[in-house]
Amino acid sequence: MKILFVVPNQNGDFYKAMHPHTGIAYMVSILEKNGHQTEVVDLRVEQNIKILDKKIRTFDPELIGISFMSRGYKESYNFAKFIKQKYGRKTIVGGPHPSLFPEESITSCKADYAVVGEGEYAILALANKEPLDKIKNLVWKDGENITKNELEKIKDLDALPFPDYAKFSLDKYLDRKVALVTSRG
Image (cartoon, rainbow, N blue to C red; front, side, top):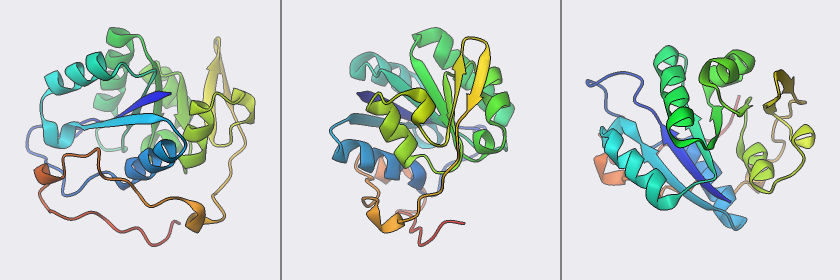
């Protein structure tokens, strides 16, 4: 499956990211390791919606993942809704805000899916086209009904591959470093 990850610029023109999105780098890594194709557009540093448009048209993803936090969530809802309407692709939202408010996020974004908590195995299962009702940490729409699957924390973080930052424009971040995550809580 081809999956495009997008980080919207939730904080306006005066914000530029310090470093790439670690959570997405983990998801890129596990997907690529398992034979899926990924691309990333981080609008916090790209600052140009035309780059995203070109990436969607040339990469032709089956699924678009959008990660966002609670700060600026209304703008992210509108952004995700715009992506869904303009390109007609399946969309999944994740990150801190959709983890706290998955049903509201799916409804407000018009997204097909939301991930609650850790997303590595959920996105992999979705890419592998496993039955939706069997995918842990997934919230999904069945017609007008929203189903929230069982939640599960990753027990062995060492089983995850190291995050893959190759899809990020590393030279465009303010701090020329990547974050190191040593635990999850």
